[in-house]
Length: 295
Image (cartoon, rainbow, N blue to C red; front, top):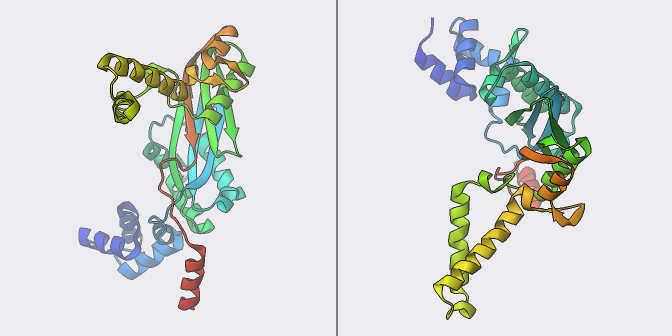
């Protein structure tokens, strides 16, 4: 009825995914023009054109259900859309579906069927309706034991979200720790969780800083090594949740605060919307000028 080359041609014409192009050709009995219209009518071609855009705004959402908690990040191109009821409704729906289904990856979630549609179908339809690129970027499902406690916190309306798990302690302490993680952006709970390559890189930078300082020119290797250890400890204090000064009482660190309440930190997850995404640098005046010239 149609060949692989037809699927390739339709993909090039519309920018839609390979499987969507195959579905379109099957539905239209191999007719290329009708397949293009079919994709447009489904909103797939329109959504595909937005794939090259940068979506670095959006929302983090968190939900608990018994011994399971889920945090997701869904991105949009503008903060305005991130506050849209349909967008926020989709994010809430996504969290519920992740809690209900046995999924491990974003691809697993998008493939989940809800009625006749997959979640990916719903995402494509939302992208077409809203008119911006919508991207389901990531999620994490966190589990705990019965005797453990979740602490969750969202900051700036969902721009940052954290889930922590405490063994012992209480809900107030768990929330305080989640707020700390939101505010102070730790990399790991403790030194064991810091990636080895990050530590090695920091060691190298610290040693070079010390050696390049003229004040240290006459210092022995032993003293330079001691100075390096001191600065590395300061680095750990900044990036390890347990070693950070507790924001509500800087006279103790977070580990001591939790320990005083009879608890210990088991795990932490922190999402910040758009972190690591290269945001487009736009010049508003140039954008307006371009639109005027095109008119």
